[in-house]
Amino acid sequence: MTERATAPGARADMVRNRRLLLTAAAESFAEGGVDVSMGEIAQRAGVAKGTVFRHFPSKDDLLAAITLQLVDRLTVAADRLRTADDPVTALRAFMTSGVEVLAADRAFCEVIGRPSMQHAEVRGGIDRLCGVVEVLTGRAKEQGAVRADVTGTDIVLLLGGIHQTAFPLLEQDPQAWRRYLALAFDGLCSTGAAVLPHPPSAPLQNESDSVPGT
Figure: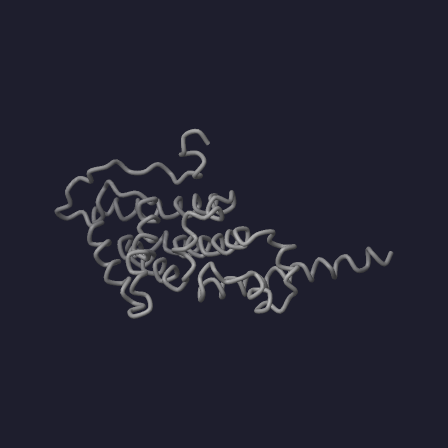
């Protein structure tokens, strides 16, 4: 009886601790990058270090959860713009808000290539994001203002590329990404655009799917 009576409370504590950890980790990684220790995150969340590892066995598991949150934020932002009156303005607004989100997260550039990016949930989140952005991109192409050979996957990859381009300037000029976003967006415009020299990429795949012998 006692075990049954306390179980709901224990579950509530687990949910609360996970929420505290995700919030603390997101803030810590955004400020200090991926080198922030699990102990620092536990301290910031106000929980024991062992609690972190009960929820997230490794730092890459925790980074995956944070990355998924970030990807989901981008998906929500794109989804809100799918029915905007001006598709081109909507696509620019999405790209602006997307790079702004990434620019506020110091860990984003550092997490690229880590195992956390290959978690099934993260890959699924990226697939959903690309799907929504494909709709945004398609509407802009139908209007004739954006080149016909660009894809939603191109746009998603450009977000990270723009952020990484401006990342070395982050400390001295936090808004430098806006310059590179404008350059990239001008390249998407259809007026006078030459045919791209390489075909569009396939939907983003797991790293193990694209490396021979794995």
